[in-house]
Every structure is written in C-alpha cells, then in structure tokens.
Amino acid sequence: MAKTKFSSRIVSAGIYDGFDASSKQLPKIKSFTRHVLAELDVEFGLIVNISKAKGHRIVWRIEHPNLVNDEGDVMPPFEGEEFISDNDWHFYLGDCIWAPIDDKGGNWRMTIELNGALIVDETFDVEVDEYKVLNDDSFWQGRRRKS
View (spheres, rainbow, N blue to C red):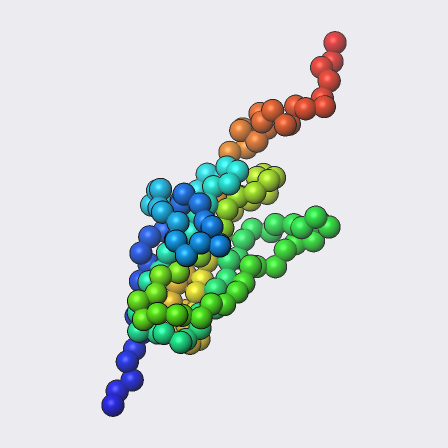
C-alpha cells in the first residue's frame, strides 16, 4: 500500500486583526500583503493549511532583523514546534510590532518544515516610517526648547 503524502498551501499572508494564543480561533486577515508598515501592535504573518499529516510535527522559525534584548544582545530567531492534530489542519505563524518600533525594520523571514522538508518560506518587508518615529510625541518628551 502506498504511503499517503501530505499537502500544504498558504491560505493567506499579510496583516491580521490580532492573535490570541489562548483561543482556538485563528486571526482574521485585514490586508493581503508582504509589505508591512511598522506600527505598534500591527500583527503580520501567514496561515497555512496542511492536509494528510495528522500526528506529524512541524518546526517553525521567524528570522527577524538584528533585534536586541534589554541587555543589548542580538536576539536569536524565534523558533518552535507544533504537533499536527488534524488531517485538515490550519496554523498561524506570525508576529507583531512592539516598542520601540525603530529597530523592527527589515526582512522578517518565516519558515515551516514538515518531516525535514521546507513547506513554507515567506519574507515580510517591515518598513519603519522614520519621519513618523522622529516626530512621535515621545521623541520630544523631556526636551527643552532653546531660547
């Protein structure tokens, strides 16, 4: 008997309405795009559908620009794994923009592997509006005007 092969497809990719890790509901797509303007709490990523792979495991990875942690060290990529619980399984892989936004610009690459095979490889271009960052009210807080 021939072994059934799994299949996968990207259902949507872009900006979403938010993600609640405690909910079984996947986020809803707001805009189909691979270009993201960095604003606080903007959620972006993709939803993939994987069929005929129940019981297998995926490994996901988000490679981000050189983000630094509170100690000033470059953070490693975000990584994890999930077990596929259904033969018609949907999975959301994404991230959101957090403060400060000025270091979030660049390419965010999201990959998913199943049984050692790369099934998703998408890159999101996150753009920081430097004019907006420089003119944000928080930039001017604590500064005094020269007389």
